[in-house]
Amino acid sequence: MTKIVRKLRPTDFWRIGEHESWFSDMSAKGLHLHKMGLHFAHFKIGDPKRMEYRIEVTKKKGMPYEQSEMYEEIGWDYVTSYQFFHVFSSPEENHAPELHTDPMEQSYTLDQLKERLILNFTGTLIGFLFIIGMLLAIWFLDGTPVLRLVEGHAIQLTILSLIILYNVFYSTRAMISIQALRRNLQEGKAIDHHAPWEKSLHKNTAFSIVFIAIALVSAILPFVQLFKHETFTLPENDSNLPIVRLADIEQNPLLVRDEYYIDEIDWANRYTTNWSVFAPVQYKYDESGMIENRKWLDESGTYSPSVSAEVYHLRFKVLAEPLIDDLIKWYSYGDEMEPFVEKQHPDFDQLIIHKDAEMKQLFASKDKVVMYVRYNGYAEMDVLIRNAAQKVNLLEGE
Image 1: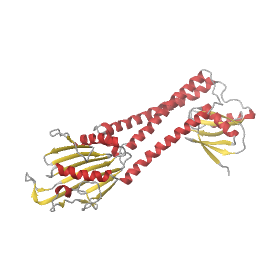
Image 2 (image 1 turned 45 degrees about the horizontal axis):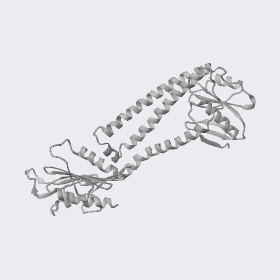
Image 3 (image 1 turned 60 degrees about the vertical axis):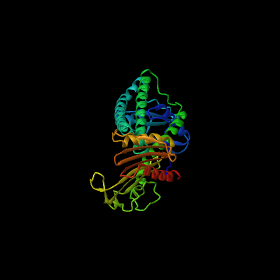
Image 4 (image 1 turned 45 degrees about the vertical axis):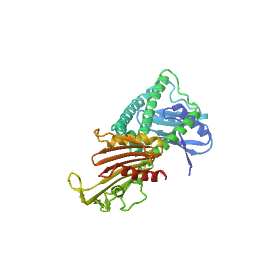
């Protein structure tokens, strides 16, 4: 059984002379071209033999039988095809005549390819612009780009846009290079069948490693986030979770849960864990309760306080302050009646509060930890701050 060796192509498909030279040098080492792929060429291992290779470009993907038979009659054997490129070989000692003796005539074979490359470039560019439009909307439409970065939902789409951007770049280079090759042929400059390819191989190898790494990250990230995203019923008793509990704020033994179960999860009292590259630890939670013997001051019903919050343990401290700014934008709800007030506090690097009737909001950071708390009830802001400080210190020490 003939053993097949796969090797990364040294350069882009439109560099015809470099490919022909590479195939010849591989044959001299006992590796004879068998098949061409998108990124790799397949070689059969055999005896070293110096072979000449020529690449013919056709208007259609298939090589016409009559044309292939004509080339075989003058000493060129068909080897393989890749899209519109067809490879022929001949032993060097046979001195087979060139497939094209007139560079001007050969330039006409590139006309159809040039048109296809223009169409491919146009389609790729439209796709890229569509992705960019989506990204701009995700990152900047609500003016909270750091929050979107930390949540991580737009990172995979951003990486995908980089991949598509490379395809736009690749299509542009292909279009320009084929046009340049066509112009050279029209000027009578024949293709150099022994063009140096070593430098291109090093560049292409390095770029392929980077491109594959980016593609793998793009593919893996959504699965990691999906695996890390879980929702649980909030335990009734206190736990090691770095979240401000409603019972600690209210300090009333008559406080009971206001429950709402769906699929065995109490959605009125639940917490969700998440993960992203820039915030490996994330919590979002809601807790609701009621005190039967107490009413809201406006007599609207039974006193039913609640607390909702978000906690982020960031990978980089520099993100903390801009994240707080974005959280304020996101949770201000366009309410400018009461100002957001920054306070100095020994347990926080930054503390900003907001009070509006029964609703109180707190935005705080300590080192790499950022916490947002929204509380509806009659407890004092100082109680909320004290409990938030305890929980931030719990997570900041991890």
